[in-house]
Amino acid sequence: MSKRQFRAIGTGGWGRTLGAAVISLIYFFPVLFIILTAFKTRQDALSWPVKFVFAPTLSNFVSVFYRVSVEGGDAEATGFGLYFFNSMFIGGTSVLLALIIGTAAAYGFSRFPLRGNETYLFMILTTRMMPPIIAIIPIFVLFRIFGLSGTYVGIIALYTAFNLPFSIWMVKSFFDDLDRDIEDAARMDGSGEWRVFKKICLPQVYAGLAATFVFAVILTWNEFVFALLLSGTQTRTVPVQIVRTIGGSMGVDWGLLSALETLFIIPVVLVTFALQNQLLRGVTFGTIRR
Amino acid sequence: MTSSTPLPTPQAAIAAAPPARGARGFLGWLLAPERRGPLLITPAIVTLVLVNIFPLLWSYGLSFFSYNAKYINRPPRWNGLGNYADLFTDPEVWGRFQNTAVIVLGSVALQLVVGFLLALLFAKEFPLRRYLLMLVLAPMMLSLSAVGVFFRLFYEPTFGFIPRSVQTVHYWLTGVDEPFVILDTPVKATLAIIFADAWMWSPFVMLLVLAGLVSVPKYLYEAAEIDRASAWRRFSTITFPYIRSLLLLALLFRTIETFKIFDVPYVLTEGGPGTSTETISVYLFRVAFNYFRTGSASALGYIVLFGVIVLTSLYLYAIQFRGRASGE
Image 1: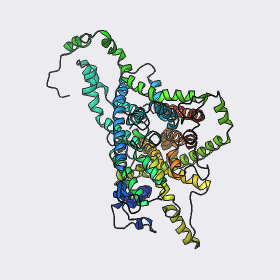
Image 2: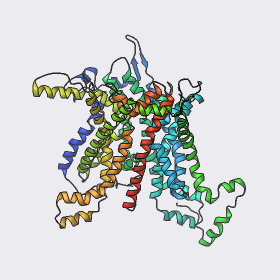
Image 3: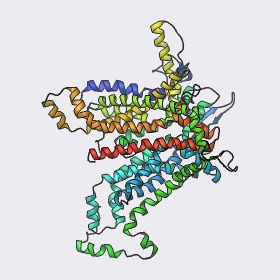
Image 4: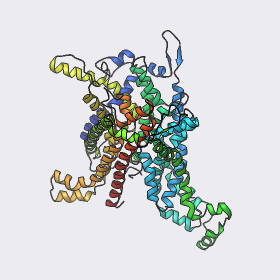
């Protein structure tokens, strides 16, 4: 679990570093460009050639939360505080629920395989591969019938199920990686199954659970289609509001939009650094280890 | 695991273990060892059935009706196979599948090439490698809708970075200063989407190829060195066989995901110009939530789902194949 993922073959010197740095920066340029634009004044943002050296301003970030919507009026709250809270609250709660249910299932699949274990796992994976747009049609209808659209309960339930297949596969892969001998030794010494789980298996996968949690929170934080259709004005999440902001009639305010995007993506970029050893496992839903 | 109580002797453990927990009644029956597996997975299965499977069956039913989700109280009208028949004969649907296929082919091909080259670059250890790697991997973790917004800014005709750059270069070369518009023709708009999608997902391919590259046993290269095998021969007989299965996985996984592409065209081009970049998912969204032909959308959903299931089965087959091949 340590540094195996980015193991390398052979070594290159600083020459390769230079080449890789150039290419990485070109690759990362769009993200960098947005972050830089977020700190620019309106004139700087629109100037050509692009200014890389400029006097930074935080005004765009302020106007994400408070801005003048009517000419000559006072600055008003834009509601973005609420949307950020919603994104975090909905993401955090649903992932926590998915992780609790998913860890139990993962442990079951890993340690007490059923007849047809692989079939169940296959079915669970299929629900994740399914185009979300198909599930959403009936869910939309059901939410309307049961009055769940626009409520936290509805969207959290939906995201819990959305995160479940991912959590199960990911956590199962961590349980599968453990050395069974320790567990068997504990069983021989008379530990009950609950004790084996709680005292031996669980502590060994804490790091994996944390990685799964963070990964799933990112996926939920980024999710757009479900949120677009099923969240109401009070439960709206950040991606939906960003897309609504470009659609607005006031024209595109580059600095503002960049500031929004920056606030939205910076946590993800930072967390990616923290998650680096679990990236491969995460992006392939735990189907590929290492 | 540092418990202060002394460990029981083996004899005591054996004597104490199974019969001690002789709980009776329903709870005892429920917690019996043979029911541990089912018990642990039940909450997950129930959740998935309620939130995934049940709605899916519901929409299967709806696909045989004429129904409008806007008027939930109006009863659905039986339409038999009418929805399916209409869809199979509708040139619009066929056109959306074609749009999607072009984007899938272009984007997945570009991802494989770029991802492969990036992996070769990062295969060797060098100073600062891990940090530079993170810069390349970051796009993959971003939101699809955020990437749509990014590229909308970059492609924006008057101030966008890319049109401005092209305009400037064009001016240097020919002396003609004319604005360059990206999203105005079907071909350019499609390329714009392919570019954005490939930018986001090439790191994914890189990650898989890297995993393949490092799994090649070193002694094979050492042996090749002794045999003075050419670089091409080393690649084709040692490296490629090891990364082949992972490349296949990347290809299938990205094909499935790109086939479902929604956020990027929805945000970036809104399907335009005309309907030239309207993918099947965007079209499905329109049918379902703009025109509210819910029954018809459900039927189309099932047609798409069929495609995804075929691709997913191939993907899972490839995983198992790889598992067997590498003895995992």
